[in-house]
Image 1: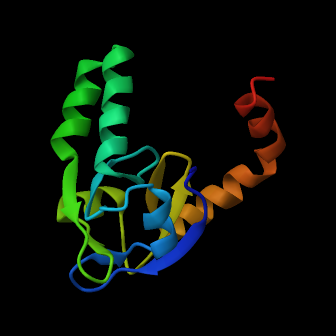
Image 2 (image 1 turned 45 degrees about the vertical axis):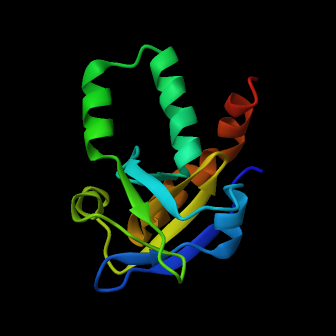
Length: 142
């Protein structure tokens, strides 16, 4: 199932963020007890199930990705465990990369989730929403 939705989350003092049950369920794995988190674009973080991360890695390998990107991406990627309350702890270096403060958005984005600092996501939405129709045409191959 495609991951969807926008969830406003609060990071606690240990940089833990609760992953909503609906989003955890939509990853499609009944035994989901960890997630893979890595740097994304526009200072966001990408979050994959372990199986989704392997599928993404296969796409990167098939696409002949640039070696420097692979070094930066894989060296920063990390498996994080989900605790009994469905929270994941964001590693310090990734939280710093994304500029995460107290409030963040967790977004469902088809085959993965993204974690954005609230202010950065609000700016992204304000900047890109006026071009939504143009972006939709491009996304649909038109």
